[in-house]
Length: 486
Ligand code: FUL
View (tube, rainbow, N blue to C red):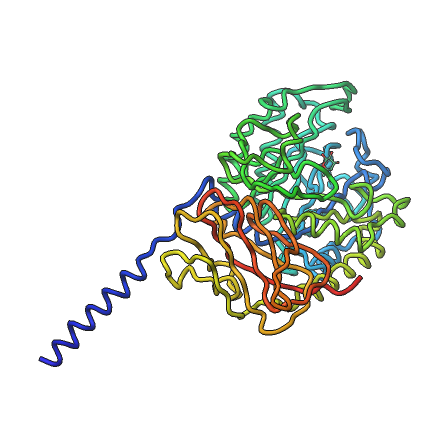
């Protein structure tokens, strides 16, 4: 009998637990990121390598008539590029396998206009292949930029060129192991050599390339690769080449209305609030004034302050940062660039070394179904895949963290649980010192990431007030840091 009571009691308790645990997660809101996009969001910061005949002609755009013989780096060391990128804290490298001039950094079977006819390694070299090996060695992912505009090839602007472009793409996607990003540039059509025709050729940027078919090819051979262009399909351009994201940054886009080279690039920094696809922004910028190496710019490498500004206005605004570090004529990343990259790494390490909110108790004005699985302590558990969420009807809410005594800080990093979509459109960060709350920063969107910077504040509690949300809000992390004085 007693045994039975225990059994019944046990069943009841189990029932109760399962009822309590039965609080559903919030319904997804709007377009959601794919697995490949989620993986990309976590990369945050990676490098761009602009390197080709332009490095040797001192140009930014080659005409397409360059002699492959001019491509002759004297001390080429691709492993140095990967080592520098790894030491800089980058997670990958994207290389201009072919820029607008049409010269191929790999020995493509479809053209003679490549490293095959360069004195470098007696025509036996393969820059893309060497980079793929070096990236593997240094734990980096590799991406490829294959310019769709080709100023060298005779067939450009005819249907035949589409086969050529896709054949080259297939070569890159099937020869070098995993590719994490395929980069389609917006510059398309204009004057060029075109096999000796030396003329101007215009194409219809929207229809000529038959982009949907190109996309299918990439999905087939590299299903986890993200594709970048002004209009995605996976990642969009941030709309400027300064590396600056927008304060209001929607990860969503009406991508079918846009295409690479779209005249509507002014809409790209913010994205489309009512976009029907998840297409987050990537901020690309060069560490020097130009994309390619020019000795005349050796003393114009961006300053540490400029790079920090770029970091906080890109990564800090929910974009990924693609920082260009062009190899020089030796085939090396220049010393001045390396020095700056390492200064940046050092400051970022010092800044993000210790999360002052980690493991600290947190509370919220509302917790979804009062269920601990959506509790405020998910913000400080160091796991960006757990999250705090509210009841469905809530649009404004507060969370705060007890820092355990007066603590000085000047950065707060927050992110939404974007697996369920982007919801928040207004928030304020506050701090409580001497029993008084003061507002220290405000913002609109959060999405994949927001880092708020402010003057040093000393407080024992830090909080976020959600002031506007399009569905019940979620937050997966609330981190607090102290950046060293500069
Ligand atoms: C632009 C190109 O025309 C530049 O040369 C560079 O490659 C940059 C990243 O994109 O549209």
